[in-house]
Length: 284
Image 1 (tube, rainbow, N blue to C red):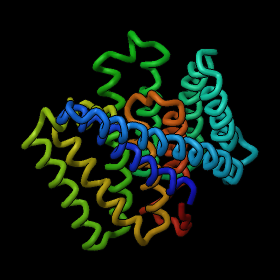
Image 2 (cartoon, rainbow, N blue to C red):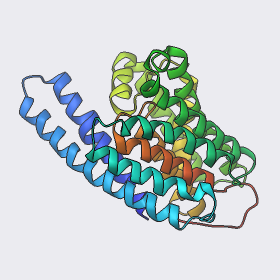
Image 3 (cartoon, rainbow, N blue to C red):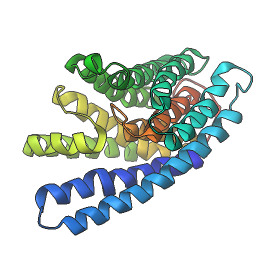
């Protein structure tokens, strides 16, 4: 429940701060007070998100199915790093956190978990999370188009692979309609306003929209399906929250708690199992 609440609140942060404040400043420069108000509101929400994500990380990490293995300690240690880095700015702790996120992504992906397409989704998500950290550890490499495009493609592929796994177990008409509507909306916006769509995406998620259109349409369709499936299926809810946290963190997470959001999202994905014949159901 904490992770799900963090994901929903983090989406509100995107809408209010990253999109709302930037949109007002871009379209109505004569209204700085409104932009500043939205920015402050977004900062307040971001603080609440940070608290929820840290608490969720400790809770999920301690209560994981593998508490005595290294994978079970990833989230609590990352949460501790996040708290320290937030209050000890400029001491090198941020760099340590970025390095630890890469290590954590590798450990979580390698740990026993889902099978089939869900395993592929976890690997893809882990690769995207790891690539997103390179910009902070090695800027000359991380700022290259190849690394940024690779992180973006990996994070786009994760929901698509998860949705394929979900669809393998059968889907309802409502789920298919949700996927179609999400895809149509994404395609319509990007085709009608390509420049503005790219700007909006960069503000919100750090995604440049530099890849072929089909990548984004497929990811939108998959996200719509997962969101609709999450309404009634606890297993899908776990995956949907994980995907949401990954995209809240973005392709190159700049805020300290966004790095933990990415790691928490990846953890949820590696703990989830849908469409593979498993009867285990877990909610968020």
